[in-house]
Image 1 (cartoon, rainbow, N blue to C red):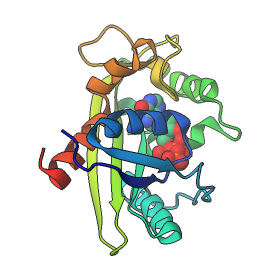
Image 2: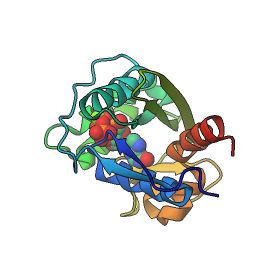
Image 3: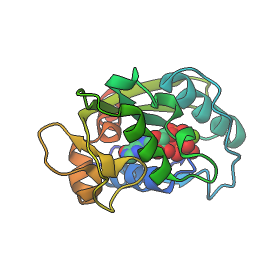
Amino acid sequence: MAISDGETWVLASHNAGKIKELRDILAPRGIALKSAVELDLPEPEETEPTFEGNAALKARAACEATGLTCLADDSGLSVDALDGAPGIYSARWAGEPRDFGRAMQRVHDELGEAADRTARFVSVIALARPDGSISRYRGEVAGTIIWPPRGKGGFGYDPVFCPAGERRTFGEMAPEEKRQLSHRARALAAMIAAEFGS
Ligand SMILES: O=P(O)(O)OP(=O)(O)OP(=O)(O)OC[C@H]1O[C@@H](n2cnc3c(O)ncnc32)[C@H](O)[C@@H]1O
Ligand SMILES: [Mg+2]
């Protein structure tokens, strides 16, 4: 069921993979997303120490710039044996320009011979409204880190993350399969349930 026909929100993200995943989930609910890339919005510096803080910072900055309802996602890979790293630094581990081959290699190198390969992806979705209110929703998916990377689908760390109960990495799954399991889909489901009651 459409939650809102023809409503357009701004998606405060410059990550093409995220933008596609969020659009694929929200389009059938009647929400169209205009991305920060299309609107030529600046990419704010992510200065907060938590996913919640950075998601709110990105959503608020876009809301102040546009006066529209804005959605942001702050997400990352949290590896248990690395005390949760790279966590909020997941994008920064890829360097500039971003190279996730390098970021995945760093996860592998830092894990070394560690017996515990468990990890989780975390997504916090923030929704900032023009009246100044803000809501945040968290989604997580548990899994394990594998090596070498497998699959060309998805983005970021997907080729080294195997969700619990699956033999394939997110990189080996079709978009609709990742969408059944992902942290981002779970955060959005929480948002839809709270905001629209369905
Ligand atoms: O801040 P925006 O503009 O939205 O884009 P970003 O890529 O910088 O996004 P984040 O600051 O939230 O950093 C999250 C990083 O974590 C990784 N990540 C998040 N979700 C992922 C997913 O579903 N699959 C693989 N990697 C993911 C990916 O490398 C992202 O760049
Ligand atoms: Mg970012």
